[in-house]
Image 1: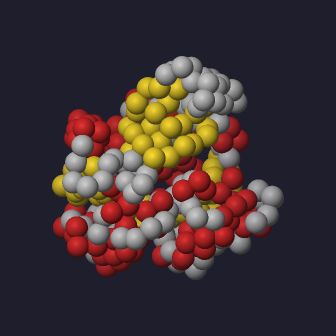
Image 2 (image 1 turned 45 degrees about the vertical axis):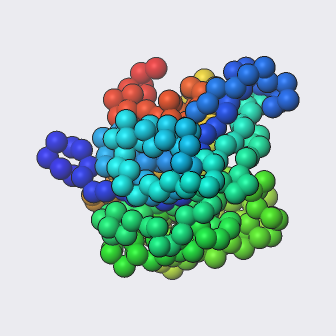
Length: 327
């Protein structure tokens, strides 16, 4: 940790950034929605902003359309203090859009506009290797594995980050509608599984990847691989379970009034990475890890209390207020 308590190591997030169109009214289908609010989205970009909100240092590597929305998104990253040297703009393809509806239960349904979108067209040659090599933590999802050339760019970026000594952080962030089939999704998500040092899956993703409807330790440990330092299973309002080589356990969630779950997992990941980027020994110390995960759960909970991902990402003081029993 730097002397002022702010993390100094760089967290580089790789993948997609897009615009989520969220209905102005909750609990309706896309067809019924009277109007939509545009909100920046895309899990890796959300993580990058989550990090800077909490006082950490982050950069985003990806491709946007050379259009109004693409430049708007790049501007939002910069306004939030995210380093944008790793962003490319595509003249021929649009920035991706996602229409996200919040059902009455606060869960989401997605409709994507990517045909192809700019993020899918990032090539290995376009990668800013300098940014990637300066990462203490390199974070990514699985959407960038779906099609070429982005898949090759993803694999190269991971390799370069690993060679430079970065901790690799993987949140598969399953979006089934984007994959050709469930089998292909499972196969490709698993194709880079044993490269990651830290993996976070949701309960739904755990079921999908294991093919079991049990959310238990045995099911989680079937996803363990020998190079893994930390496996996390997030359980929504039930908190999260953690697994390391030497210990495992659970952390309870915080109870808040949920409006929109968009970005909660990204907020959780951003908080975790911000806290471990300068001190990875936390991953081997159960008491300290639990403290960090409580903080991450608080950040995730706060994110569900507002609409959209980016506007809802908390600051450290907001998270500490919740942690210390405030509203």
